Length: 231
Image (cartoon, rainbow, N blue to C red; front, side, top):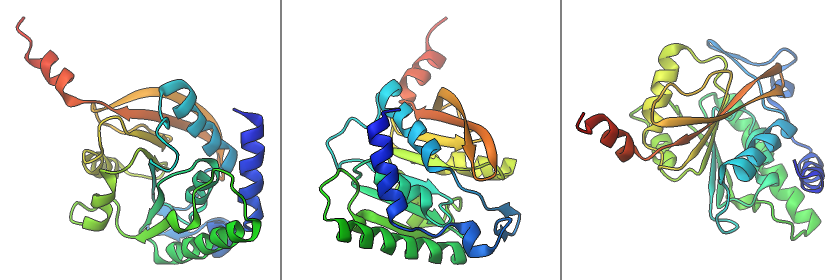
C-alpha cells in the first residue's frame, strides 16, 4: 500500500470525528434481527481498494467518474472511508436498519463539515457526493436499491452473517451490476459464476480478522460461447 496516500487519507478520515455503529448501540454491537453489526477497519478497506487498483486494473477512470456502493452500510464509516481514499462520482451506502441509517446521516454531515473546515484540494470525494439510503438491499422489489447496482464500479458487502438464502438474494440483485464491476465481500465470496474470484485477503475487521474476497463481474458472452461451442 502507498504509505503517503494511506497516512494522508487516514488523517482526513480521523479528523472528521465520526461515530461508529458500536458507539451508537453500546458495546458488543447492535443486534438487528438475526444480523450482528460489525465494520471493516479503515486500513483494511484501503488495502482492498489498493488491490483493486494496483493488481486488477480497477479505479483507472478519470477522477470523480466512478461509483462506490456499500451494501449493509451501517453507520457509514466504510462509505466515508472510501470517500477519503478515492475521488468518486458518488459513494453510497444502503442500510435497512433505521437507527444505523441515522448514524450514517450524521457521519455524512460530519464529513462535509470536516472538508469545509480544511479547504483542502486533496483528491477525496466531495461531501455532497457521500449519500445514504435506508432500503432493503436484497429485496428484488426495492427499486431504490436495485437502481443503484447498475452504476456501481466497486461494491462492498460485509456478508459474514448472511444466511445461504440471503447470499442467493444478493447474487440475484448483483446480476444487475455492470460487467467489469468489482465486488469485495467478507468471509464468503458471492456464489455466482458471473463473478470471477481475483484475490483473497486476510484482514482485520471490528470483530476480528477474516477473509476478504475480491471478485469482478465478467461479460457473459464468452461463457455462453464456451457452453455452446461444438464438441
